[in-house]
Length: 317
Image (cartoon, rainbow, N blue to C red):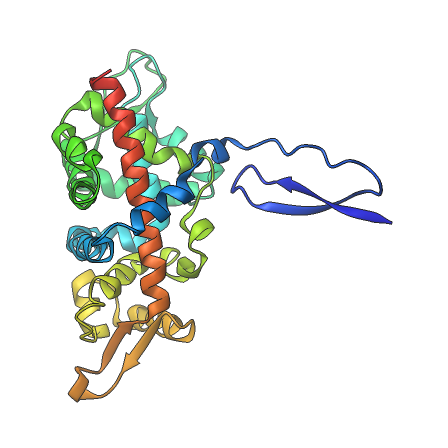
């Protein structure tokens, strides 16, 4: 006979059931680093979502983010949204390391992307090639001639500052960290620890599906997360979004868009409207998707608060 014990998976914080000898005492479960990073986050999300105007604020932020990400169509074809956002975050974090550290190199980025199961080394090569072509990264001189160090350019950093700024603007309507973050967003001494704090849970294995499993079908598809943002941001208006219109906006194939949306319909996250009198044909968000996106936005904003506080420790000790 055996009894069931529990071991915490340190990568994603999941509880795994294992067999132990009958009568043995359960050993205390050592908290993972991810547990420590996310300590109190669930309660903080609940408090944030209870604030007046939360739903309106995050819908507005989602609509603005859709516009902000429209220029990512080339990278959307190279890898899914989750992988792309995490990979760029890694690049920014490595870029801000001190000169004595290894910094951003192709080999290191490939190794970390593989270790975190973001994408293959070949995909990293393709993304870096596109980044060079569009002036988002450049070679940097290095005292160690064996190392081919890269730096991100202002163009790439400005793209992310614009996106961070949209989140901080939304946060500013609910918490003081939003305005404080906006005030320091162009201060490198602030940006380095702020960006590192945003990346920290991802480095420890957190993924959106840990907290919001229903959106896996969106985040693991090229351009899928932007479709989820579009449907969510449009939810209050209720006007169906056409697959053709979404394909033009995000420069993805109509068949790709239709496939994602059809799976969303089958999962109960979206509804197809065919009646032209109701604005069809097109798709609208169902309550399940609205709930999932509000939860995801709450997580993002709570982490913005934490990242701002980390950045302020560097500039306003």
